[in-house]
Length: 180
Image 1: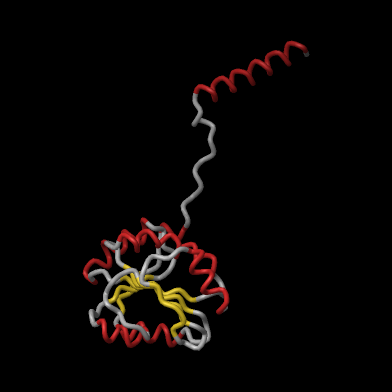
Image 2: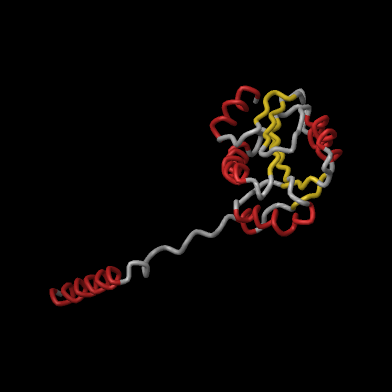
């Protein structure tokens, strides 16, 4: 019996020596990627009337609307904040509407790649029209075309706050939570 214990101890030492020589050999496999990252929501082309309809359909709820573009450095920097915000708000929190102002012809290439790279789990609308006055009227604010723009609407559908710079999750939560 004593010999069996020595052999078993020798095997354990051999395995420990092997794993020390090959540190990655006994690591757990990487976790599977989030299904949302593998299959992000569809990209939808949107006109100003589409955005007006989205806002009208969300009446009775707090709405955060973000206008962005793939080429906009501050937009790309704040996108992880919106991803976290969206995931924290599901279900029953604020409605999040994401609108890309990229060229509609780039929707299925640039915007789709950006969506995958940033692990965006929410629907993305790509603005087809370039009429800042019509868009501003629907959004209840002037829209110069400068990005990023984030707008916060109360349950009654009125604009409560607007940001024309990149914002953080903390800033967004501080503005949204009192309205919920």
